[in-house]
Length: 298
Ligand code: SF4
Image (cartoon, rainbow, N blue to C red; front, top):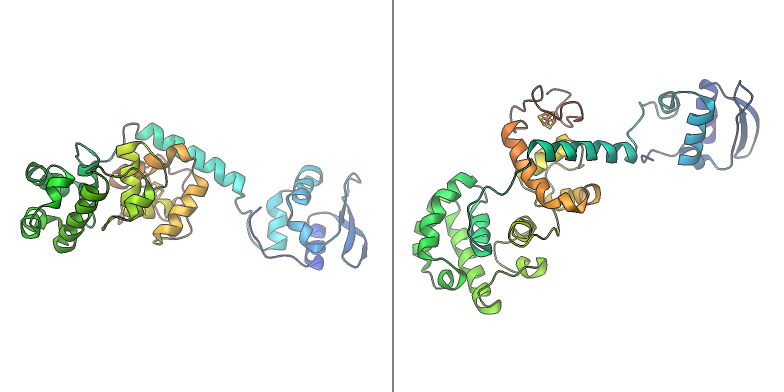
């Protein structure tokens, strides 16, 4: 059931009467209703029970009234989507993503977990294409964590300059490489807590590395495409709170698709659901998408 404000008994009585029920008796918070067909009797024990699944189902099944009508007379709104509706809509959308982007994968180029980690740190506020132009020279010079840990920060900055924010990125890559070299024997750790200890690594980066380098689905990497499209699809209630969005998505989406979900978002954000001018008319999800926050325009 959606969460709706509780109803007073008199509101319920009025709504049911509008829907064709006759109130036969009422005492305190007890009321007895009979539908004109004489078959259905409903007894309300407490006012809040009216929004319980049981009674709503009874009204839908026996009273033969459109449930939309009940909602209109009680809360003054159209029928809200129940969580069942949301789940089935979500599963339709996920199946479509799977079909449309069967080979979606991280577009950063890397040869091992360390290179993926560094590339992902570099990709903050920068396109993957730009990062892929930078990394061949970077990894030719510093191919692994041990080599990178010994890099001169000035040399490193010069190599990654065009990715933007190169001072802080160089500092983080250097510090992370030192921890990996000394604490993890040169290997990128394959668990969330250890990854989060590395400078420059938050949940988004950790999720990307865990899935693409180790096949682990510990969470959902929430990037700008993921935030925008998940909100438009009605999967999240926040537009920009990464942690909240990740929590809501994890509660809604089956775990076996957590890793690919972000890759689908990136592909979809580039092809149809762009930030400024989404191409809803051509989007295969058009019929399923509520286009939340878009004022009904698409
Ligand atoms: S229908 Fe429009 S808003 Fe919805 S996912 Fe497609 S492009 Fe984005």
